[in-house]
Length: 224
Image (cartoon, rainbow, N blue to C red; front, side):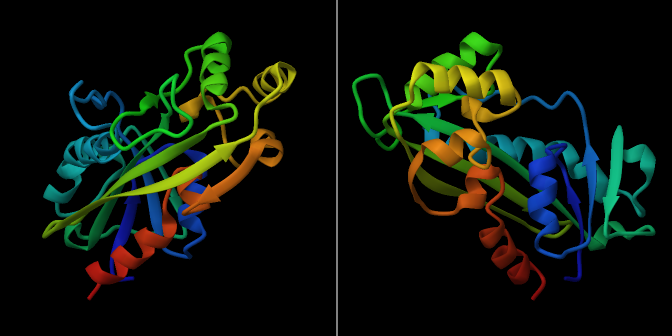
């Protein structure tokens, strides 16, 4: 890989997933990025729209001759060292949304689902998991790969089915795993996924927050 990758995310799950590709990367986090989106935007386009906004916020890193610690508020490295020309940088931004079925649907329909963000508190997490209980929903991750010369953006969608949860199961999960930093109030890799996921169509890693298979393929194209 000819590029030095900047992962523009503080998510430990995204860091773990990207590390699994055995590529050099550095984590840089800019605070206060606006992640709002138009109310009339199709639910399946929201994640990519926000990933694009994040990419725009990080473009300043491509307009300097060398990266520096002052370029971000938080900076940690994984398999990387030294400074790089901005011509060698690739900024990876991503956003994940969970799209739940409407109340009268068993499976959310394209563009008609309800977007679930991160729960505000335990009651909100209960509400979200009840919306997903016994139904099929979609997880969409939007990704932007940005270099000084070009940008590739795409979305990956995974279909997830859950069993009907008992109320105590929802309460147990929220109490013990506190999924307040996760869209849809759950992590597929945690207890709720072990006992509740009855079907999955698409990338498992996408549900965790990063479609690494597609990202790897797109990075190879950029490196040509």
